[in-house]
Amino acid sequence: MGEPFYAAGLRFACQRCSVCCRFTPGFVFLSERDLDLLCGGLGIGKKAFEQRYCREVPINGNIRLSLREKPNLDCIFWEEKGCGVYPSRPLQCRSYPFWQSALMSRQSWDALKSSCPGVGKGELHGREDIELWLRKREEELLINRKAD
Image 1 (cartoon, one colour):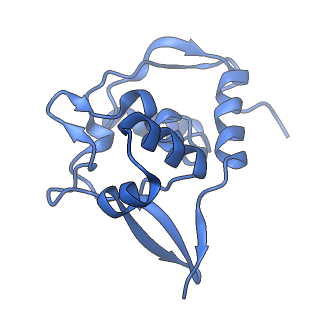
Image 2 (cartoon, one colour):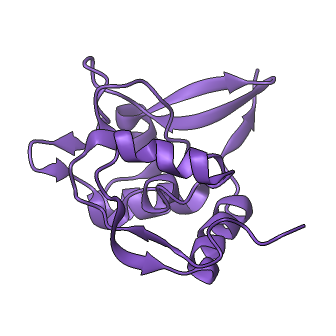
Image 3 (cartoon, rainbow, N blue to C red):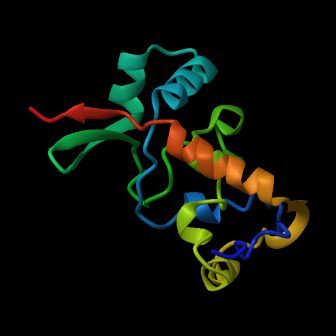
């Protein structure tokens, strides 16, 4: 097994353009840590947070907790100036674009350039950094409740 294509690092600098947060449907699945960070950042209890900002998504007989979207498909926390919870945003958001799906091949990484203006720009993120994000995504378990 050879070196991953990103062994020499990849350039990425978030442009705060919000393209990844707007206009398209998707799930932002939460871990308990995400939930704690968001509730703490907003000064709200978990039950109230879930009722106001989350939806339950059935997956393989279980329920995962995801952030809601606005009717226009923007993230529930997207505001005119960008992410309204940026300092306490979920790991899924913090780790973007260093997701397994984007790091499968040079082609999958390069494909992001058409939708994300930060890919290929700014700071060089080394292999250790990139693999740390991948490990965090594996280790920080998503909320996975049994369906009734």
